[in-house]
Length: 226
Image 1 (cartoon, rainbow, N blue to C red):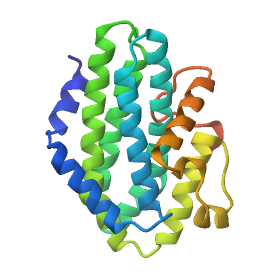
Image 2 (tube, rainbow, N blue to C red):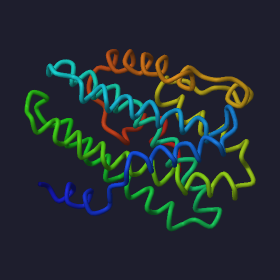
Image 3 (cartoon, helix red, strand yellow):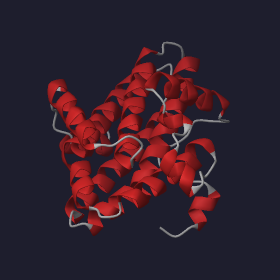
């Protein structure tokens, strides 16, 4: 077990599936259609589906394709959170939660980088995937059960957060930046039902030249100050 695995285990105490479902339902009740919270929750659903698809993949080729699809939605989702939501969380009196959120996602990125270097035919690939899944599910539980509810309650600029979150996600996943009006009033492909969005992400994964690492950024994003 690597040092990162040990760190991951230390910061991801298990919670029941029932507790996770309640947290998701609570967050859904606080969201409004098309806002940043509903987008983030949709992405959480896509991430859960992507993990299940990866677990169900049997051949090395299918595992690589599933990894690419998982990395795509994780990259887009985490980037949008790190650029938009976590700074807003810190700005509105929740610096401790924002700091922990960054730490957990950085750990997950390190795990994804390790998974990319494991032979997909090796049983160690599935073991690593399970470690990552446990960490990510716990992270989403914290967001849905507390952190995002705090941001929804405290931040006065909800429309701005919605616009910027959608822009960052779409820029990474689809290579486009929706106009401000469209980002606020329309639903991009990634915000459709989970089945349709899952199909979109699988197609993105198949078309990528190689596996993506969580936290990878485009040159345009790298040049832009955060």
